[in-house]
Length: 79
Image: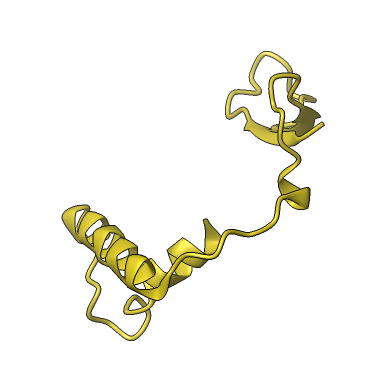
């Protein structure tokens, strides 16, 4: 069974409560650690990278700095 990360920010009612935990999700049918990675053609990947860059820029990210130039590509690799 796959695990999902859950976070709770309000521990005022129970100060000993754990603020985050992993638990089994009974509705999850895929074991993500066992799924074979997909291979995306280069031209399609470039198109997706452009879309991600457009979204990040719309949210105000400056994509013309040394630390953010490759952010769209890194994001796609992580997904």
